[in-house]
Length: 164
Ligand SMILES: [Zn+2]
Image (cartoon, rainbow, N blue to C red; front, side, top):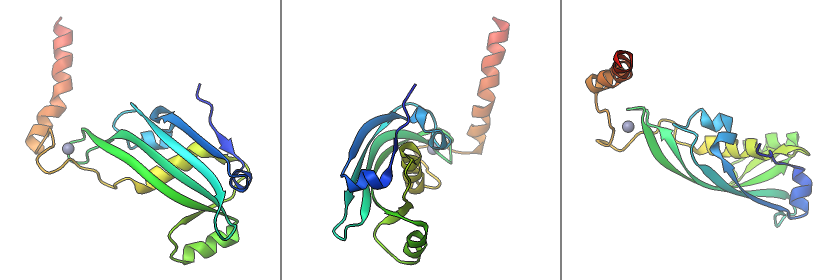
């Protein structure tokens, strides 16, 4: 079983720690909900540091290749994940303040038991296209008529199995 990593986020940032690992998509249930299939994995690096104002920061870098579900034909759609973020570790008060300002980075609540995979899921889900689609003309099922035939297909297979 995959060991789910947790970090003490302030300690991680203050001591400049780093994690770098590969995670199968199968370990990311909330992400799986929007994927066409669980195949593949992503690579991430989490680097803790203090920024030039001495504030604790996590630099997140995520890369990988997954299959989203095309919202037009419901088939798999190749998608490259390449995401980088700088997350400022905050207490609740400064997090509220940060949300009122337009900053070039996001804040997250400092947590002594931060769930790294949940953090990765949040970062990826926030940045995925809302309604991914193949490029025009690239869908395997182009219109309603074909889709209906596609839907009947599994039953046709069943029929065949029954006869054999
Ligand atoms: Zn499509």
